[in-house]
Amino acid sequence: MWPRADSRTEPRQAAVIDVGSNSVRLVIYRMDGRALWTVLNEKALAGLGRDLPTTGRLSAQGVETAMAALRRFRTLLDGWPSEDIIAAATAAVREAADGADFLRRVKAETGLDVRVLSGPEEARYAALGVLAGDPSARGVAADLGGSSLELIRLNGDAAPADGATLPLGPFALGAPRPLDIDRTRRAIDGALAPVAGRFASREFHAVGGAWRNLALLHMQLADYPLHVAHQYEISGADAVAVARFVERQSKSSLERIQGVSKKRFDTLPYSALVLDALIEHLGVERVVISAYGVREGILLEAMPPEVRRQDPLIAGCEALTTLRGLSPEIGGALEAWLAPVFQRLTPMFGDRDPVLVAAACRLADLGARLHPDHRADLAFDQVLRAPIAGMTHAERAFLACTAFARHTAAAVTPEPTVINRILSPDRRQRAKALGAAIRLGCDLSGRNPRLLEQSAISIAQDRLVVTAAPEWSDMLLGEQVAKRGGAVAQALKLKLELRPGA
Image 1 (tube, rainbow, N blue to C red):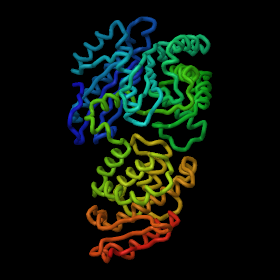
Image 2 (image 1 turned 135 degrees about the vertical axis):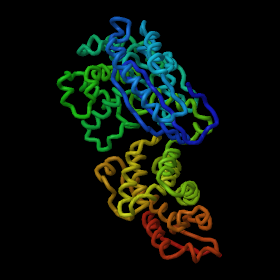
Image 3 (image 1 turned 180 degrees about the vertical axis):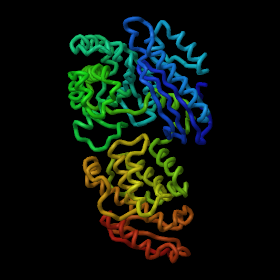
Image 4 (image 1 turned 135 degrees about the horizontal axis):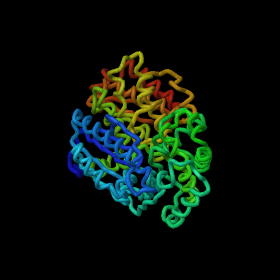
């Protein structure tokens, strides 16, 4: 069944089967409002589109590999209760003379109804997927599959439009034959020239497994310490450099590179050449990798409008804590309580500061079920590598440091090589202050939102002032609060004043 937007907001599961030109994949998601969690992710690199340019038909071997995978997916789904099961096919099935025969066989052997996406639909869902992972994304989104390239502009909150599908997937360009750089580049240039003006953009959001592999390779070459592909950023010049490095590698040379998928050795040089050409033709200055794409775009479209408007970072942090915490209401209460302080401070991330404070507050209860001797380190690691969308790598590191400081006053965070590479000293200090402030609010109130409402925190000149209602002062402003408040004041370079209510 193809999902439609409705009013359901409670957590549920949805399964998406993506029959692509190169891979066939099943992903089962848990949907907590705007947050998407991968419950199961399995793929087979079937290469359905491998023979399409020469025969006009699906690869016979690829069909058998795909059918075996789809039969397995159907069996796996029988053990996972999913309210929606969505199956979609893209360019290879769309263009092959025997695509309809393949779909009839899929239906007969698995019972799955597979919807074939048109080129414009595929482009639109890819763009929605980028926005599912980063609502602030602007510029152009590009989804490279085995047989085609989809380009589409990102127009902020407006629905993505003005998409184009081009025959620039590796199979369409000649893979798995060894790459002829000059001949293939001429073909790519010829296809891009008529549309380059429509999609010119300094910011480029790259979708697809091949480009994720290029990003992971760039991390190795740059000795980048945080191996999280989503929202990894590469300058246009660096992206061209790594693409040209890959273009010129033989299959045997690629086999010696750690971290590159062995099943992509035949197609990766083609994918690199397409990226190289796109950066030149579109005037790209910044490449952002998206781990989200068509599958997540389909799910985003089906969300109720009020859910789509939620910030995925705040929703993801809230869902992460709900799964492991004890007090689901404390996050929002802390956000309101801390606003008079953190709204006064010089922004560290521009207009993203309020979102990061809100997200950090939603993580306040993350360590509730963890051993007290280890919860700071474990909370740090969970946040640093959490599959939560909507944050840059710097924001990810900031929230991890905040989660660490929420549980300990230790001066040195875990993984200093990662943190010092990604976060400036000022941002590290702000994370320490925010974590300490969240710890203060939690300890003052016992993580009880109603007790927190009986107190307030603010900045007055050079002082951090913590007050409490008269009838609550003796109970809320004790020795522990003085200790925790002192840590916050020190981190903000202020003096602490505990002020009983008058």
